[in-house]
Image (cartoon, rainbow, N blue to C red; front, side, top):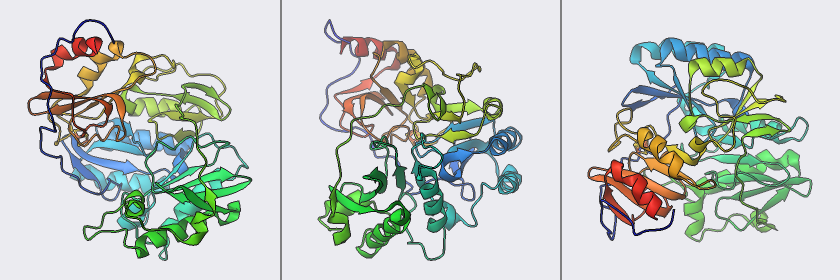
Length: 400
Ligand code: SF4
């Protein structure tokens, strides 16, 4: 992406040009679906991100029977069924309950936000910590946290989920666990057996310290940024630096990591994957087929780490999302061959940037008057170019 002067159907501007998207402040659940342009979105939260083969087969069958058959993987390692209707929601819920994938209440499902790094091994304690934390968060004595408040359990040899959104992180350190709040420079170092209770202690401090606003929202990073200091136990140990991590499609010790165009698959694809082993849902919108020692050869499953479609990220966009200012995925497909290996281009239907809340090398955000282009930023950031017509964008990118 270098060379001649840019050919651009837009202009350099000083600030955002469109009104902010609606922020609901909550994520969909199974019991509390969210309305979208193609019906209700029902989010299923597999415990510790793992689906047994029966559960994965069951979700595929429920999706085919009670939704439009499209299944999204979310950035929190959840599974979303799209196109659910008021009439189909009840039988879908009955089916999810029979699969052991439902919580007791909307409160419980909204609290159970635990993302586990997917490369855990039996006996290393990570899966147990994630399960125990999930159970503790739904107990009556758990801190009442905002619905977007989340925990990351990242207990491999080195952390790999530092760029995944979270409020409280649990990592491995010196044979124990390091627990710290997002944005903190220090944390508490405890034996593994105390990891869950220490994380809950920090969460309770967040609540008691006024981390939740009058609107019911609040994030740990925001509270710490106000200068509030966590309890002394969390000043014990410096949070070590970690190298940036990018997931690699291919074989790993724990199984085969595979991808999907825009992190979305058909119910039929999920049913076929379920035949290969238990599935670990990852926050990279990929799936790890637990125990697989060869890469699968399935239609609509990305198994090549160099696949161009891994370089583009796009949200649902119009017409399936009612907030979108335009379609996103056809543009992303057209741009994929123009994106150099190692870079990511994010195409967003609006400034909310659901599909990639963090910065990308290139972000194109749909507005009522075309696409805004942000370099090294997020969907809502100030663009360097505005009002780009989709047909001009490949040329504009080549000229950057
Ligand atoms: S970012 Fe995309 S999916 Fe999210 S609200 Fe905007 S258009 Fe909809």
